Image (cartoon, rainbow, N blue to C red; front, side, top):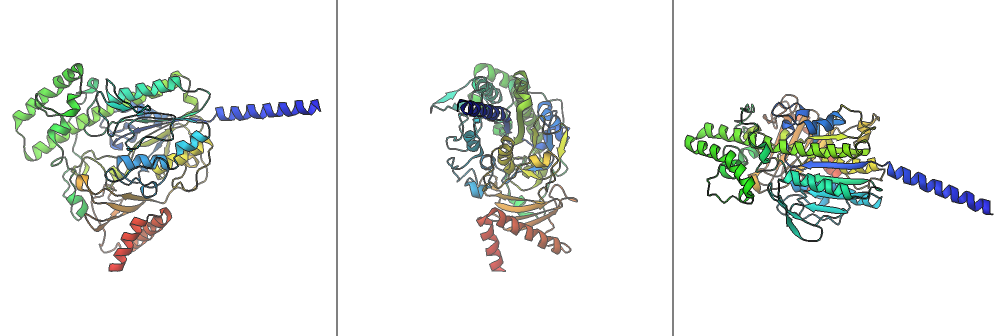
Length: 511
């Protein structure tokens, strides 16, 4: 009897040890999420505008996703999709104007928590409600500020922290990592404010692109022919970009909040850099195309300098993992909450299902699993982040998640990627962008605009990758239009988008 008990105890202890060993090997997960960071400005994607060595390192040591896209190109809804693995109409957060995020719903971080992971979100959260599913959080209220930002603390207090936002986010991140429970794996989301409007770089990066004259995009002076929604938008560099608010062309006695919150040392550096530019700008009295192109150059210099501040702090994250022997067992993902226009179509901002907005930078490093230098050419979406994290952690993916793990695509398994992607943008206020939904295949894109503008658009992506020539209704495209409409109907049914279905049903009823 004693021998049986002894054997039982040995088996139990062995099993417990194996289970603990198995859990210990589960990967840590770090998701670095920036805001409005254009893939066109990242050197890993071939950009000649600037170098992003630290972001590039993630791709070089892992996989670069060459065809990564979002479900809804606007910041709050994009974060809701990341957390839930569901489209906006399913997670309830459709836009930044009228939606409230229900943090009580199932989130991938809650699944990880239930399976022994520590979880944290630090920096920009932008979902309004108090975070749930996290053991630790410290977040900016709303958009946050670039300098001396306020942060919301877990005890309900609000604390102003001296410094530059990207540096502060990294400081808090490292502080949390220093005190975490090292017996557990962790999932950490690092939410950077950069490179959101109004693009204020760290003082050390001001002026780093002053010797560069950036070429205008080929479609900078787009006239929006046969594109009704593009014609009525309000997001042009020429008309919408404000020299004072956006480009820091401010008189010495200005009261711009983003600048007046700076401390004396920060303000002195800011004024030393921007005041001579402002004086020169006022003396030139620019108008017409000369003014528009001057604004474009200032926009690029400020935006890219802000991106440099972001890239440096991503390097700090990677260095921390190296220095603490965490690199080999930590997944690192980098993505933006959506793409951004760098003068294409004459625009800044995002929202449209056109390429530069719809597409987002995304890359993933997973030592021992993803072969360094991999390029994934399949369609992936921010919808896939949640199930990918659960898959990597060995946690069952809930059946109602609408994304899919990208790991099988990255590990050589014979799985089929997406043939088409579905997109739905809802907001109908800021920048006057008409709500729309659509389907994109490897060759074509079909979009249905509604509310502000009621129209269809069709693009041949192989001949027209920048969405300039609307082919909808043109002779010779009847067959492909029917095929795309059938694919769109199928995706609307698959993802159960009742709003889109009602619009199409009403249109059919009118015909």
